[in-house]
Length: 425
Image 1 (spheres, one colour):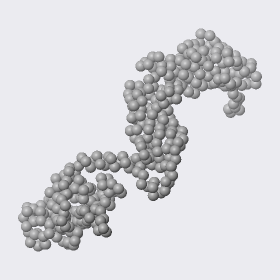
Image 2 (cartoon, helix red, strand yellow; image 1 turned 45 degrees about the vertical axis):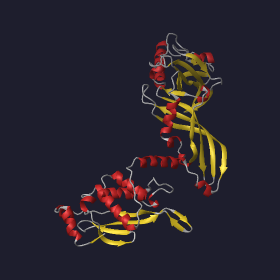
Image 3 (tube, helix red, strand yellow; image 1 turned 30 degrees about the horizontal axis):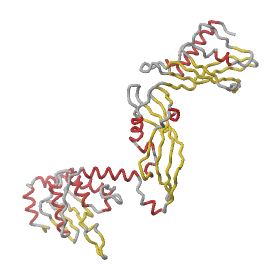
Image 4 (cartoon, one colour; image 1 turned 180 degrees about the vertical axis):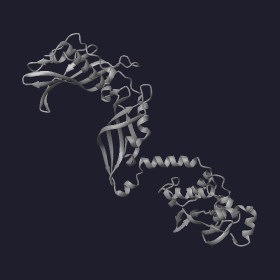
């Protein structure tokens, strides 16, 4: 047995441990008015175990229904009994909030004796905090849909249905702290599986939300786990399945159409032949005032291989490269296209649909190729085709010597001089 002063000091140390393990101020100090018996000649009764837990401010103290369990650690035998109790959570903004603490009381077993060793809190849960609005929770988890559904790119038919159970028990809300809680969310979606199947699934997800502090909104989440069941399954041929667009493609197409509608509207003439088309494009380029108008023109006139398959508004990698390169040549070089080219087109080479032309100094040669595209086939012949740009590569003088030479002229005078030496388109 230990003396009263030693016991008091021990209990104070135990109290400090509890304060640290359960989040500081959330656990009350041990009441040391009545010394506790700490060694027993047989397994402690529930009443004796409870004597270590009955402290000021704690209530609803319970022990586990089982007989406790034995374990061995470093050749030392132990016996422990699970417990839970509630106390005030001491959250200033929510004075009625409760803190539930769970853990076990541990005893060292020495022969027939059971010596009290420690109170070990393992879990804490807060009750009585208000949840954010359900609409806010759903808005947050759908802000980046691929975080909630990593396989979203395979979803089809309709956007995932996301809801929160109406029954409080089914929600299974668990507050870890004032800044973090988890809740069940129900989802339903349709997903392509492999190359020949589409499944409709219902899932129960466990979502954990976080915020910076009790006065700030929840701003991030993690998807802790999910349990899913397939409620319908349909089989398709590979070709049939490829025709079913996924939601990501639909959403991207919709966004691309929105962006395209914001571009400057460009009216493209119905060209009578390739020469008229080539000349119109050159004139447009040399008079272009901004990158958006150039992008709009190119998106109207580039051939289908510059776009994502099946789209007329989503540029693929090649189409994006073309637009960027053209705009860079027109507006971003040491000298711009307009500063280094003439109103007249100086031909280096022409063949039907193809034009290679010089700059004002006759130092670089840009390339432009147009071709008939689109339309419909009627009685074996294509009808209603229009001229599209198949190739466009623009070059400006770049060396310091050429740029110095270019700037030594008035452009109109240089153009008149060069026009005497080359073929005009």
